[in-house]
Length: 607
Image (cartoon, rainbow, N blue to C red; front, side):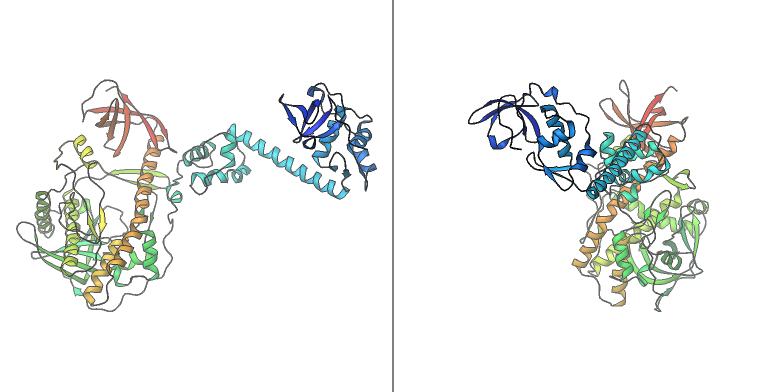
């Protein structure tokens, strides 16, 4: 059948949509379904029916007898007019448009208005099955989204929510579920939804996975301890003093006359630069300390072999320091040694501080501490806590200021300074720790002053040249007392041991590479530790709806104050009417907690 002639009111196809001819000339003036009038070339349109079509409202879907027409046209071709008459028994603008929609649908017929072909039974059946499957999938998806909106998910819905978990863990930036729900595709929004639906509960700490940190100890074999000459210090009572429950004791102290010995786990005796274990430790940077578990940097066998006090005698790298009356170092010895160590908690050691040798050790460290304070060491005593989670039970223990804790802290700083000075004297490439001073030196005495003074200190920088460390009050310092727990401490031991044995040491470039690798990952470690601690603190408060406590105002920005809760070492914002003095104590309760955003709303309670 020839193409119908173009005339006013004819039904034409234009850009896959219906149009009505208004006038015919060199160009054809048409009106489209959206009411727009325009002139087009005749070749840009196809006439479906000569008309008259007066309104697009006429083009309503018609009931079609498709199966019969389709079976009659098997292995044949036709055109739009003939197919329309076969299906609808009449050829009108309305039926022509319905027929064309059937062709465009592509299930039974395909082609152009001039040449239309009936599809084979095999193809039609295949497409029917595919369409049915697609429809079933769409229905299932819509039902799933409805359940999510109504917060009544079923066990099988968890697979559909995998994309949300990937967003919450920063593994994928997109989630069709979040898009369909009209939620932002952020890790916080995803986390909140998972909590709301019960896919995650408040015990889910997402931060290690979010930062792609290892969650298990490395599975590597540890070489045996080599036979070598060691200084025998087993005759000196040595004490590894740490928090109760500590499982990786890597430092201890003892005294021999006027020499204080700081003994450190001798991990570098078996872990050599660029060995498999060394590379694994470099990639981890340090132990990851979470309230619910500790993820070690080294294989568990390293702690078993080198943990001080875990065996009758322990191999150590010992730093022997002699101070003058002003607290300055006048003699430094660094020796591989054998030591016999007794393990004590800070509380146990504190009860013995008046005894020998604790009193003598404390006298040395106090002299050293006084020297540091004279050189501007910061005195900041803000509340600290230790959070432990066992079987979902959250335990918060304040870190109490003890003389034994001060003694151990200064002893470790002595070892760090001794290591730095030894490296400087012998020109050993080293990772020195320095910190620029704040603009003005202060001696804060109250909590608000300490809180704000702490913020003025810049981050410690690790460099290949020694620089003063302002908050410690030291002219030279290096971290060297935790080789079981920190990679750069291990590198420091590798350098010292190699020098002492006359073996090749790492050069400046190799040290710079190790510092860079460690800094790249330890920033994430510390961030995950902070986020994890805050997470469990908020869970702790969330589980105690009736919690009441005291806070101290430590900072102010307009009507927004920062309040520090000493018993939790937690600071948060609070809006207060009127003007309040810093260090004012106020009674608090919790208004709301958002675990996903790690936010807490506090309200002031009457006294």
